[in-house]
Structure formats: structure tokens, C-alpha cells
Image (cartoon, rainbow, N blue to C red; front, side, top):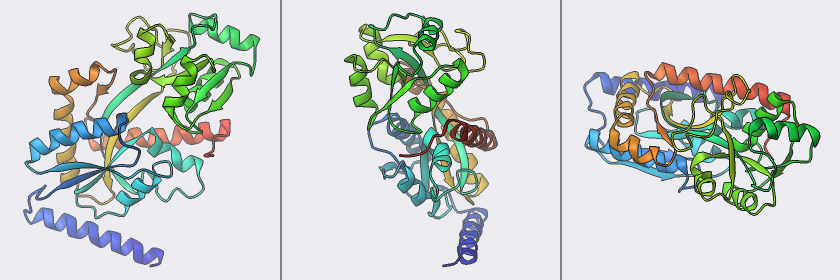
Amino acid sequence: MNLTGSFLAALLLSVLAADAWSQGAPYPAKLVRVINPVAAGGNQDIVARAYADQLARAFGQPVVVESRPGSTAMVGTRFVKSAPPDGYTLLAISNTFTRVPAMVTDPGYDPVKDFAAISMTSDVPLVLVVTPALPVKTVQEFVALAKRKPGELTVASSGAGSTGHVAAAMFSRRAGIKLLDVQYKGAAPAVVDLVGGHVMLRFDQVTTSLQFIRAGKLRALGVTTGKRSAVLPDVPTMQEAGLAGFHDSTFNGMVAPAGTPREVVERLRAEIAKAAASPELRNRFAEQGIEMVGSKSPDEFAGFLRKQVDEFAVLARQAGITAN
């Protein structure tokens, strides 16, 4: 099928879906799938399953999470892009969704044009952690040490474009320092080596490092969000440490194929916002350092995604970030 044929097919699906809604077809009238494009068990998967349970209660229909990992989340993302725009196949996303297009030649999707934004679902601060053997206790002391030893301090990342890698690149450019990137095939081995003293620092999700910080096996210097983390109240933000405007975190959210009827998107957003505000869900995840969030409107989340895409594209060009 040529490009014109593909466009007409997508347009027809969108019109049929909207027409079904306008004729009073209930939504949802059957099982809803949420595709998780990364490996099961991580924050993205856990958050998606929590919301799926809440949506199932609200809808009176099954809402299941199905993992389709592979190729930096591109396999599952492309699958949802090609699904009918009827609200029955959704995509759980994170930062990777907005960053891959700037790192690969043919990602097979456009995060803005090919999807309808529904809502953010959670936000997880990152924390700059160092091995206790490193003679620094504040961000300022760390920056001073890095300037005395350019390119000598090793930072563990989970690969090019990963959350920790991007945060380290942003931090280095903002602080005017140079770090030596050591890449791992995932967060777990990176943290293991950091705890073992084989590397010196890492920008890690609070949820992963919290147990090691509390046990004294890692030292937390600063969090990357605009406010302090509730689970690390004594750890300053990067802005408090002198890096004005520094902000980076791991967000999770939900999108649908482009052309999904606005009424369906808004119904999903409203139920997500209601779930995010429930004390049961908020308290359960707050204990892990995860803030449950619901967007005020689909347009608000769409604007957030566009900003994420644009800002990372600039950083990727400036810092030479490409997928391995």
C-alpha cells in the first residue's frame, strides 16, 4: 500500500470510529488493551497495571496490560500506531517515547502526529547518587571535584538515550563538567556496579536507589525535580544546589492511535485523573517515590509531549546522543 492508500485507510478508520460513537455505541463495550512496549516488571509496567485495574472498575469491562517489548520500545509503539483508532488499544509511554525519534533514522512513528495524547499517569524523580567512597557530600562539592578531574569520574548509564544518560548529559552541560560514561544493558547491573564501587555515580530513579540510600550504600546529593522527593526530604533539588531551572524526571503516560474520537480520549483522561487523585493509589505509590498524576486535559498532555520531543532533539544534536 502506498502512502496515499495508507492515509486514506487511516482516515476511513477514524471516520468509522467517530461515527460509531455518534450513533450511541457505548464505550467501552469490550476488552481494552494497554500495550506496554518495554519489559514487564518496571515502573512503566507497574503504573500501567495500576491504572488498568482502576479503569476496569470504572468501565465495567476488562482492561488488560500486554507487554510487547523490543527495539527501544519501537515494536509495541508501532503496533499501537497501526491499531484501529477506537479506544480499544492504548499505549503506555515514558520518556523513551519522545526521545527515540531523535536517536534513530527510522523509528517508524511520530510521537506527535501518530498518536492522540490522553494523560500523564505518573512522575518519578531522578536522584544523583554517588558511591560513599567519593569524597563529596553536596552537588557543589561534586562539581568542584569533577572540574579538577575532567573526564575521570565514571557515570553509570543504561545506554544511550536512557533516562540516566540524558540526565547526566544535561547536568554535565549545565555544570560545565566532563564525565566518563560507562554504559550497561539495564538499570540493575548499573546500580550493582555503583554499589560495589566499580563506578562513581549515577542519575537513577528514586524508586531503584531508595533502598541503597537508606542502607548507606549510596549517597544522595540531589534530586532532579522542582520540589524535593517525599521519600528523600533531606536531599535538596538541583535548583537548590545552584543549577537554576534544572529539571528532569521519568514520566509515564497513556496515548491512543491518532484519530481516536475526542469523546473517547476525554473519557479515558477523566477516569485516569480520578484514579490518580484517589488516596489509595496515591499513598501506595508515594511510598515508592512515585507521584501519580492526571493531566487536566488531553491538550495539556499533548503540549507536554511536544515540548519533550523538541527539547530532547536539541540536546541530542548538541551532545551527540544516538542509539547504539
